Image 1 (tube, each protein chain N blue to C red):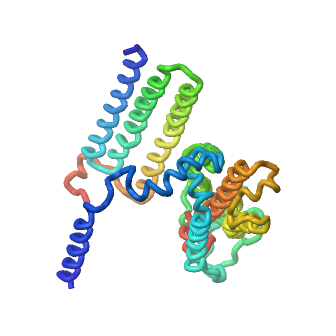
Image 2: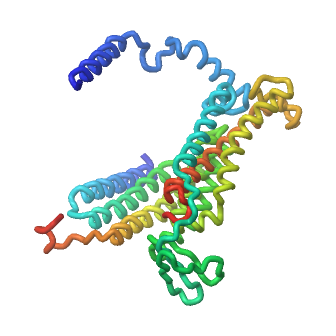
Image 3: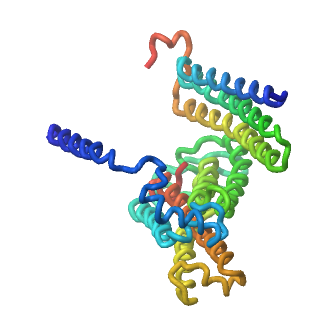
Length: 276
Length: 112
């Protein structure tokens, strides 16, 4: 069987090498890829969309339909992780740790014991709880706002520099995950609940697809932002630019929420009670 | 070649020297903790020197754009200075909590 696999690999590899000389040279201006569509994008991109970054123009305007399904793929990846991992079992009463806030005493309640749930004076802490680390905590608290600001910048500045919804969304999600790592999962849930994460991920894809539907209603093609000009009160070129920004925001929301959802589910094995 | 060019070249060369020391240290030191020492310190110092060198090089033609770029480079330096030692600290902390014993001369024979 291994010999068969080896022969197959060698044959396919040989065929690939056989076909290699027929390819155009790297960056050949006469190659089919750079004679039909690419010059059009490069020449028309800035004039059509007022976005000097051709990548953004192609990704979010010319190939907007494609990118919508990329966002949908990310959304369904988050959903898949949710459905595979999330467990809604009743809170199993294993050994639990509770800290008495006024005194700092930690109680360890064995299985079947009476838990001080609902009391203001006790705070549940993780069973893998590690003592409060001031250096990491303070540094993360210092860094997180800057990471979030930079993420917003990357989303908003995607027209002019490398960036856009996907990258900015990942940065924003990373900021929230950093916060969750530097404290614990409960503190992160207080800031961003699971419901909010689910809603945001769906909302992101909805913003994207909804923009397309609005264009459709206003008489254009799906995702033809120039028809948004009437609503936004600008001319067609600026309307395309704004349309790109709107869908980038949608993509950013979806990506951010999916990142956080993946982290929540993976770090607590779907139980969402305690984790890193 | 202006004075700024020479200073910039010297700074970048110094940064590369620190990076080289860090790489050698990561390869040559005996255990986890001592390897993190060059990884955390020399890389931070190396990127500091190299980045400052680049910022100085940019200031050769003094315009708003180059000053802005130099300021962005300085921001990178500041953030790496904050985060890199913290990351090293977190890794060392995790190692101690996981129970990894530091290397000593006596434990050299009985290394796991």
